[in-house]
Amino acid sequence: MTRGGHAALDGELKQLKSVERPAVIRAIAEAREHGDLSENAEYHAAREKQSFIEGRIKELEAMLSLAEVIDPAKLSGAIKFGATVTLVDEDTDEEKTYQIVGEAEADIEHGLLNIRSPLARALIGKAEGDSVEVKTPGGDRSYEVVSIRYV
Image (cartoon, rainbow, N blue to C red; front, side):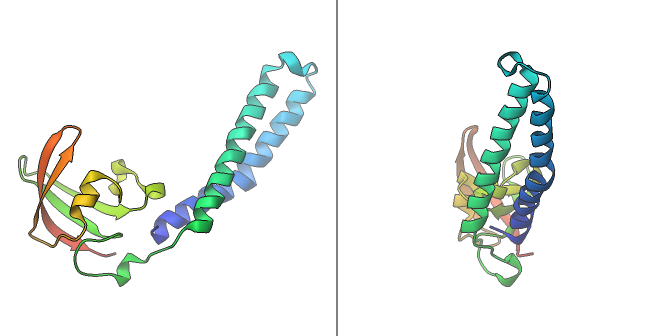
């Protein structure tokens, strides 16, 4: 996982523990004061939210405890984990830039490409100027590697 991904997950964990968890505990206490719990929708909704929050906290703690933080700035050479890669679609000449990251921090909308995705797997080991053929759900695509940066 990159340092940025680790920081984002750690921030989410702190938010859940310091803000969300106490808020849902207050909501449960408030809903209990309304009386009969069997027909108390607020109580059941708050308990459901509490269950989600506790599950997410456990999930984040497990991910963070097993995470190995890699600093891409210390890397160089062919494409590997942490690389920021600029590609040109050979069919449309559209240029795209992605950083290859771990599953937990992947977000294609923000240019963070999951290392297990077909595109990332095809890119690993390639150098600038190489062409890559990728089988995607939308059909086969060809890309040329324009640049590789480790930031």
